[in-house]
Amino acid sequence: MKNIKVFCIFIISLIHLSCAMQNHNNENQNDKKNYDFFPSIIVGKVTSGYKVITKDSTYIFQLKNDYQQGFQQDIVGLLNKRNLFLVKQIIENTEARSRRDLYLSQSLFLMDMDKKIVDTLYELKINKNEISMTPHISKDDSLLFLFIDKTGGMSKNKIYQSPVDLVIINIENGEVKRINNFYTFHYHLIRGMGSDIVSPDNKYLVYSIFDRRFDYERHCQQAKKSNGLYIYNVKDNNHKKILDIAGKWPIWSRYNDFIAYIYQGDVYFYYFNSKNKELLYKSEDDSRVWRIQWHPSGEYIYIQSRKQSKKWIHIGPGDGSYLTSQLFDIESGEELDTGGMFDGKGSGLYWR
Image (cartoon, rainbow, N blue to C red; front, side, top):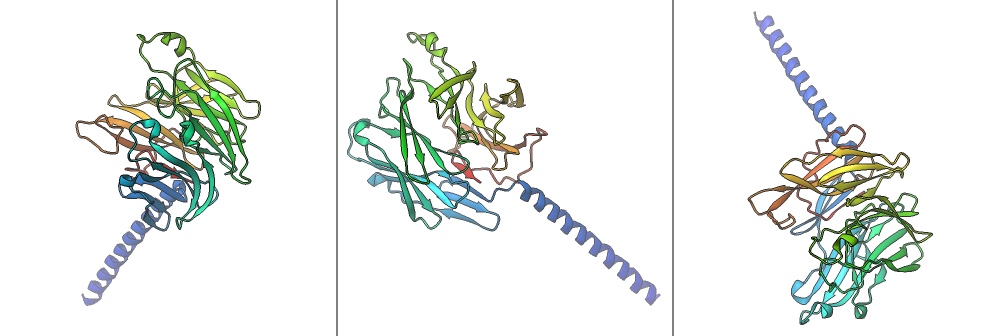
């Protein structure tokens, strides 16, 4: 009996060991699954600064900010091949009586992970009422495309800013090329430009014109004829409309043959060769896609949506909604289980 009891205990121990090993293998498989699409670095804006997530660590990266003194620094980009942040610095006149006198200086520079300024890329001409808009880095880190609002934020309708200049900065040699009136129309139009507007070969930019003014404004219907998705040829300084719809936030695929964009709250692909449109993601009834972004691999697309809620969420766009984050496989169209790694990052999400 004693031998039988010992044998039974031995068998039970083997079963427990087998189960433990199976659970360990499952955990490793789950880790491997997450590892497949986990970027080498994720930077997201949070209340206390910027949350930096790598495969080995997570920490808060804080910049110098003193809002009472009018001093502000923000991360507005992340280089794709080097451990450098693109930082925008603003110094405001705290005694300004009008928006035109608000800014004392604005500059754009590269900062390393130790908060050391590596290179100042551009200084704006404050005396000419320039305000920099979102900068865009080419995928090979060689060029920076910066849009400049020349109205000083004082355009007729305040949120419609035009004309706009385009500044192209060669990061490697510091050469600066400025294209005056990148586009200008009779009325100020809204743009929906994402972080991946530059084609992989650096030859083109993709952007949208989205004029959502109401019909009571004079000549509004004429202005709305400009709505659509456009490609800009950097070398020839030429604009070409590719879609006659008021799509928003177009982003260029890393494969160079198609773009993704938002239309009426849903996500579509547009293929250049066939000129076909394809629906990737349709929003639920209580939500609308707010912004989209390519995963560094080009295999996945990151979608942030605004979901309606009665509860006020601070990081949301300010209308009582909150943000939801999803990652989709562009080949299968299936959503990936990210374990919430992208949740709560707001609009300032950068990765590589």
